[in-house]
Image 1 (cartoon, rainbow, N blue to C red):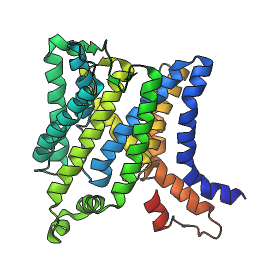
Image 2: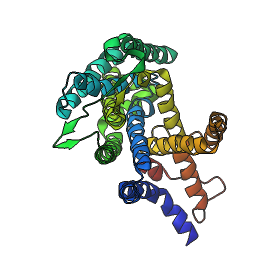
Image 3: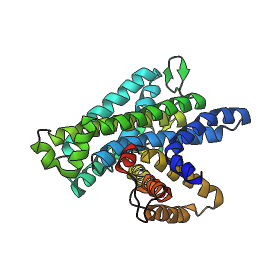
Image 4: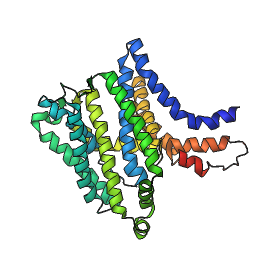
Length: 335
């Protein structure tokens, strides 16, 4: 009975998380506690951004330190039109998607002319260029950022309402996770995963690996921009700090914690990273020291993050498993 529970827990955990997220707004409304509704909305938005980064980094092997640029573009796609009195959410979303797609294509095409440390540094440089560009735009608040008086209006709903943006973030997160699960097993996903292993062989069998990787980078940029769009509405604020390398680094750490290349890794990583951060903040003002130790400990649990740790635990609990039993290929693929 115990083993059966442990075996099933690995598969049940994502459903438990999503069920808990469904309960949060009702509980927040009943107890008049909007703080936790805002907190979990923020976690889901960062999970969406981590899912986006997983497409480029986890699937395609593109170590990007510039994805904060797209979150910032998404946030300013709300802030700048709102500055001029435009609160049409569909128009703001169109600006977000088109700007992230164009900038993603340009930066991706240039960055993919190199690999390894060169790719990392170029993506970082583009994000810092965006950061300093918006710092210099004093009309939009410069370094201080800008408040958003008129948040996005869509289908008669105001995304500035904490419960509305929570529901939208929840739906976008479910759709993005489902999309990544389908994309992972699709021909497109297989090509970019193959390009991560050996781009020359992918080219040799007739698939232009660089074009596929640029496509993955652009899709990743657009989804990351949508996360920024939602975050701007949640906070009613946009700041150049959202484009800083620290945000890109946080997304990479979330992905590493959860498990790069897995479908659910970004979700687990965002919950672990932001949940641990919030808990430690309530315990001590020196939370960063403990946070660093906790990150090291979680990292030592396994190279494949939380998903890999749970796979190993499931294999260990399986009746009849050997000392070095590992999860079957089918289970790992499903994860």
